[in-house]
Amino acid sequence: MSRGEVVVFQRIGVESVRPIGSRGEPARPSARCGTGRTPALYSEGAEPMLRCVPRWRITGAVSRKPDGNPAPSIASQPVERQGLDSALRLFVAGFVVADKRGQVHKRLLTAERREETLGTLPRWLAGTTAPLAGAAQSPAGLRSRFGELVGVQIDAAGARRTTIAGALELGRGRASLFVDDRGWVALVTLADGVPLLCSRL
Image 1 (cartoon, one colour):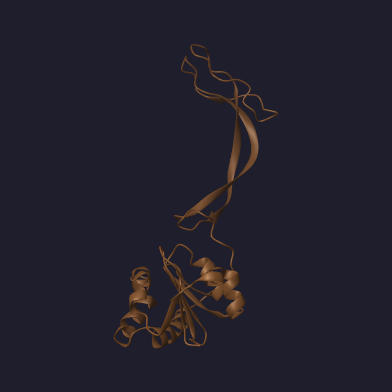
Image 2: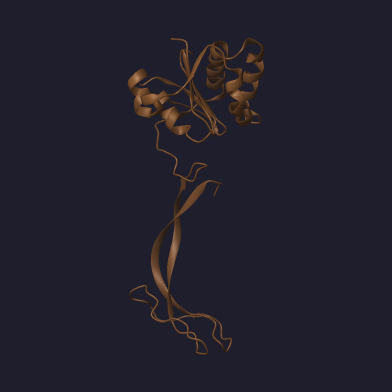
């Protein structure tokens, strides 16, 4: 199980056990429990009595975002290195200051420096850039403005194809970058800050 996952258990039955008593006898199975409830508890100085123990098994895991909330279910498709490289070339050509384009492209293409670079990205942006405001701060607002604008979203975990509205939702509480397929619009989200919209429209 990886960090950031919550294990899901399923109850598959109940059995009764008699725990180690004051005389030191080992715990051993006892009669079946019909209700799964604990029929008796311990009392000081008395022999431990029969108790029912539920049996569980792991059935899966649910990913969680860094803030502890379940990651949203957003339609997306993984992007291979070639697709990531193409998206980054569009982004740096349109939205990064000239003397930093090669460095930003290289660092975002590989995983080692990606998270750090995404966090400092706003200082290297060029062109028309503005914090999201008003209705545009929500996925529905972005969808209303841009429609189902498709592109590549990049974060520390990798890259995936999604819409700009999906990228905003996926990027909440973390550093990420979205660039549309034509390189005309980009969205930068931050771990602690208002998302930035970059546009050449």
